[in-house]
Image (tube, rainbow, N blue to C red; front, side, top):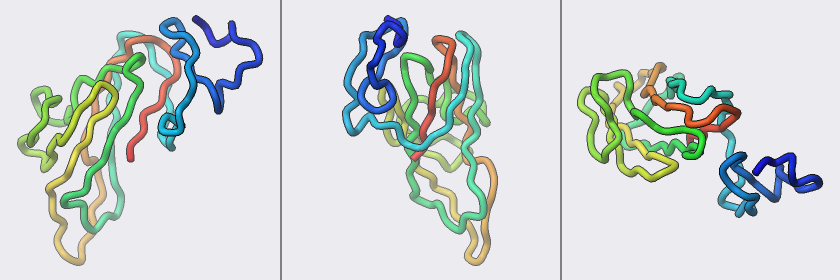
Length: 143
């Protein structure tokens, strides 16, 4: 089904559709879009997403959750900056990152790096690798 088929339907606030894959369905409050970044992808291409921070003083024990649309994207790696594939729960050697949970549309990571007292740190925390399953616009949120 295509969104254009449903003339007059509110696809901004009420309905959602995965074009070519689903019928329209109601957006539950928990599905309301969170701030994230959008990207336009091409089917079968791979994309690297750099998660970075600037001027932080501590992130030991901090957790982030990355959410994506599994109809549009497949997560291939949560730490593409190091060799191997990292999709299972557990520590990722050499990164200070631990995968604490995974699901079909999200992954949660915790960080075990310390920053010396009185210092700040800026840089790439991790590099996510995705494969586009379809072409079009999508959003990745990091909270």
